[in-house]
Every structure is written in C-alpha cells, then in structure tokens.
Length: 122
Image (cartoon, rainbow, N blue to C red; front, side, top):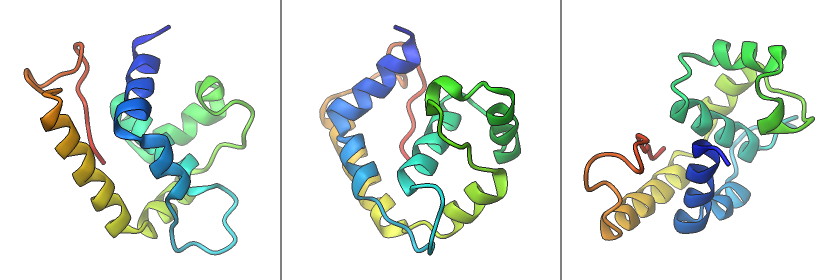
C-alpha cells in the first residue's frame, strides 16, 4: 500500500472525509460529474503538488488518473474550474474548521507533517 493511500484512508477514517464528500452539494445544474469527484480529485492534486487544472486534465487523458478514478470519465480543466467556482464555500469552511480542530486535538501537526507528508485542509 502506498503512502498516498494511507493518507487518504487516514483522512476518511479520522476526519470523516467520505461523509463530507457524499453530503457536499454545489450550485451547478445538470452536472456530468458529482461534486465529490471534483473535490476529491482536487484534494488529491494538492497533495501530489500538481501545478494546475490543465495538468490534471492532461494526467487524465494520459491515463495517470485511471487508478484513482477507475473507469469514470475524467473532468476537463474547464469543468473543474466551473465546479470550484460554483462550490458552496460555507460547507467547505465548516468541514475545514472541523478538520483543523480535530487535527489540533489529535496533535497531528506536531512537526508540520504526518509521517513525512505535508497535510492540507481545503
């Protein structure tokens, strides 16, 4: 099991990330991609230090995201930008505040990293 998978499993277990992604809604109408797909892809790209939405799109076209998205149609850079533009900021801030509070309580960021990984809250 690679380190990224361990980090993702930790975030799902401790910070209830999966519950947030399932409940999260945005203001887009008739969207082809679920908000959970866009947000999780965006969070993974932050953790992997991907430079731009266009780089994520190129990674999807070249097959680098196949293991992450497993057969789903990959969103384009414009779709991801539109989804993030229409994101519900209040829901994200509420989740972010609870993640930060729980991380401080659990002393996750004692040295600024978790098992050598830089951790981010979105």
